[in-house]
Structure formats: structure tokens, C-alpha cells
Image (cartoon, rainbow, N blue to C red):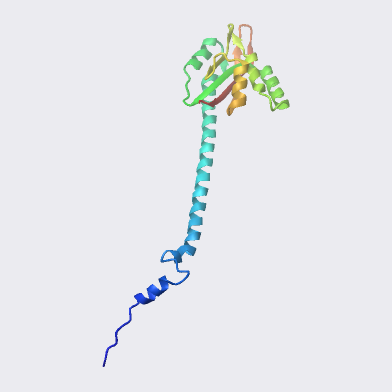
Length: 193
């Protein structure tokens, strides 16, 4: 018997390579690569969005935490009898990355400022805190980091209109020579920079 010569498969490959519409070994896989690429783009887009949202909320929680730290340090036991007590708390307080302005005002003045702020939400009514700072022994119960201390209304207006800020208020008792009067400690914080 005579053995025949086998024909090479390469001839079939060569004829296929020269045929119209043949894109090569990767080209035939393009239709299956499209859903994979779309899936990767969707995954990384969702991941980036989630990471940005987490960072934004983390900064918000950090600002709230810093404001609470400042307020609790200045408030002490909620009873202010001397200016030195408040001033020592102000001088010893440093929170990294945050600036603040704090003042003690009479409770009636604070209520009036809040009422005005509710009626005019677009104007920085909180800046009027600077005009109503309570004094003990002739010294104002106000301190600030990032602006001058005691601060002016114009400085507070600039902060309240151009920065994101957090405001907290706490009741305190103020011991003046004739009586003990109710007051409110107001702390306004914003990010340094």
C-alpha cells in the first residue's frame, strides 16, 4: 500500500488569514472582551464614588468631633467664676487642623441671635456673637485660633460666608459679683487652610 502525503493544516490557516473579516487571534475575542471592560469600568467607578463619599463623611465627623473637644475643654464643669479659668482653658487648647472662635454670651442674647438667624437664613447672623460677648472683671470671655482674639464681627462674617463651619452651643453659669446668671458658650470651628 502506498501511503499518501498528508496535507498541512497551515494552508488552511493561511487561507483563513487572507480571508476578509479575519482580525487575528485577539480580534475574534473582542465581542467577549467588551462586557468585561464595561464591568471593570463600572466597578472602578462605583469604588471611586464610594471612597469619595466615605472621605467626605469622615471629614464631617472629624469636624464635629473637633468641635466637641474644643467645647468640652472650654466649658469645663459649666460654671465660670473667673476670667483666668476661661483664659487658661483657651490657652491650653490646640486641635490640629481646626481653627475656632468661641465666646460666652447671655442666654437671652443667644436666643435673639437664633431668632434673627431663622428669619434671615441668608445673612450671617451668628456674626453678632462678637457684639454680645459677656465680660467678667472687664475682660471678654472670648478666644479664637485662626483669627484675632477677641474677634470682630467682620472677621466672623468672613468665616461664616466663605468657609464650611460647625456651630455648637452649651449652657454655662456665669458667676458675677452680684449673682449667678445663665450664659451660653458658642463654639464655631472650621478647617484650617
